[in-house]
Length: 229
Image (cartoon, rainbow, N blue to C red; front, side, top):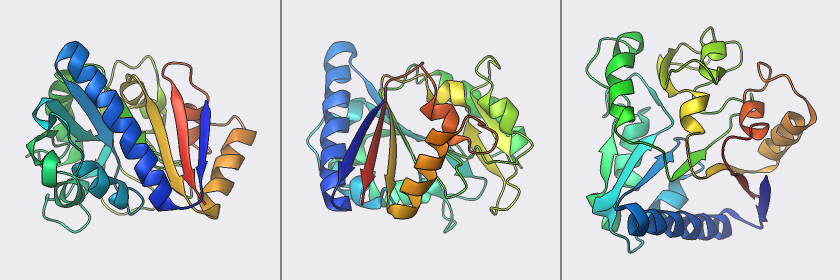
């Protein structure tokens, strides 16, 4: 595991954009395509804007989300709305996008179609994950009924419906094995509170208590942590 610390979010955003562009460009050169999984929330917005301005063959890039709330893509809480307004702009407007929210009535009914859509993406180039103060990542929440299935590396599942115990909205989330099917996994966090959660996660082993531990303790994909003070 690689830990990279930055004095501020601006320095982190620059370094992370450079890393992601380099990996996407290398994949495009070697195989003709690249893919990027991003997460929602406030933390990545500056990074999204910077990344969107980078020179790259964006038409060869597929972007999707680690998780999504089961709401319309114009809803204020939609991760897709966040990505479309902050990342799929400027140069990156030419990228392909796989939406996690589909036309199904609820997240459980939408699982099958989403799993088919994700199958076409193959191994991801880069997966960027956030982390909540409760230690969740993607929509793999402590206490959620679907958590064990989401963390099961042998489940054969790539996406699951999740009903958080406290957070609003039904969710759809990539499973741990699908998130780790990547050439690089990056945890992107900022602030002292997130550092404290990260340190607590590193100090214990119970992944049901802090699901981010499943990412920290895995050996399936290279892992880097980008943290801004």
